Length: 345
Image (cartoon, rainbow, N blue to C red; front, side, top):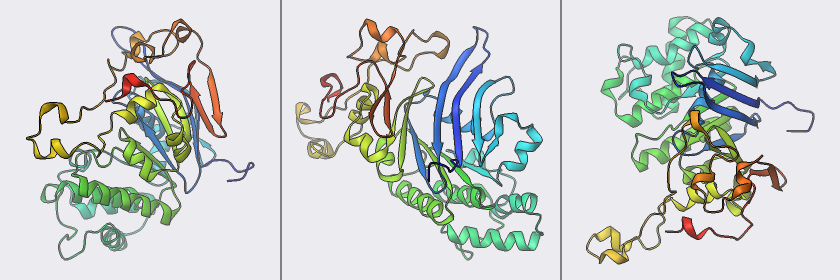
């Protein structure tokens, strides 16, 4: 993308507040990022960090009483100004989403053929026969052949991985410009997870779509996306191209997430289950929990869980550039090669 090109997706200072009986809850607090056509961005963070809410804001699927500020532009069009009927015309056609639980996202009383073809009939204006033919080809493309998986099957007749493939086919039916995948492999076993992720990446590259991949798993991020944004308590605390981010994780929270990944070294005793307890690896954890959005502390929301925090963390938090396209929201960013002993296993 050249300097004069506009990104496919551009989010600027996005803020989402939900009303609650105890007062307004700021769910998203100034989220900003860009995704170019053919580019894959990963949003990573713990549950409650705002990843899925960001996806719902892009799709226009927020709760009715949500208050939205900021900008969401898709292919140059401001989505926050569109009415619900106008957004309906763009969902599926210009942007689509793969949800994390296909059994609840798919309609149990419609066949898989109907669910893949209905978007094409609605948005492309084609007839049933042509839509069914395209649906059959799409299902073949995602690994569900016609002999074993006819169009008249229902979701309950499929496994979790097969249902996820149906969801991918339905999401790609109208060849949208932007695909959002919200924890698309959460309910699947490890082997099927890898297959689904490989399939999503292959199709995104083939169709030159933009991809926003939401996950809590830094291992998935490392293997999949071009850029990574780390979210915490509704804000992006670190963003960079993926390889430089892993080479220099600048935010203590990013270090904590990485330390919590199970690593292969030292697992041999745990695998057989009969080694002495002191030889079994102990997973690192980040103490505490993500704060309640209605009761966020002043300054850095991570300060209460961070071993490097001090009085300065209660003030204004700067965005510190660590390298080209790599920044971190932290008063005390971690230097390259530096470790945080408190997050070690």
